[in-house]
Length: 67
Image 1 (cartoon, rainbow, N blue to C red):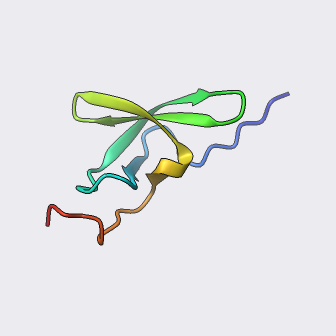
Image 2: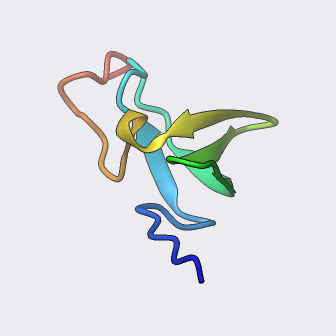
């Protein structure tokens, strides 16, 4: 039996830690790899795949340059 422990859930709003604008993204898919998970994050009509260490549940107000 395989137990998958994901840090982010489908439908959850998250932020990329490297995004200077700190735009809110939506987790739309989770891909199970042999040694890690990848999350598909959607922003508007686009989406991209990211690993857990790139994602945060909270906005980084110090990085946000759009204010």
